Length: 251
Image (cartoon, rainbow, N blue to C red):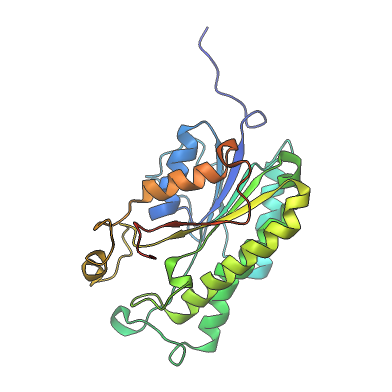
């Protein structure tokens, strides 16, 4: 008699925002390969070329720029967690508006409405999700991973000012969440990717690569492995940390 697949109730479950490409896509594959149930959230409908079997059933279309829609998505996520457990929350979604021709938008050029939208998606949505799913994370003694950026600690030639400051704020939020969620048995950490080889790289990235000690771009799979580490017992005493994944670019 063939072995049946584990049920949703018995598998570890993770929620990932921003799953449709790059780091998010690689993270889905990493966790799915390890037997996790992966629930994804993005602005887009489920992409047919995604690799995990339960993807269409476990994808939630949500606009994280809309607080009301985000609250609706939290209620939907809670209803799908039949056993009331969430083992991992990975806040990966992020937006970075550009100017004409993909130009970097600084503090002067960025419209206030764009500042507000960027912070809603990149900063407020992560804390809304963690608070809204606190009971499920606590039941599982789960892990939260916030995806920040090297742009959060230095002025970057391509990343806009709103994106960069939202990522700096997200690291500050990670520290505060670690203090607040730790007593509940929930670990909270961040990863800070540098130049990762995805479809959203800007022209001129090769000049940055020449200054990276490892002299190459990172891969989405390398980032996904670090996220997986932070969501498993391998990192059971890692809490309130920001792991730099940038080939030494920050040194």
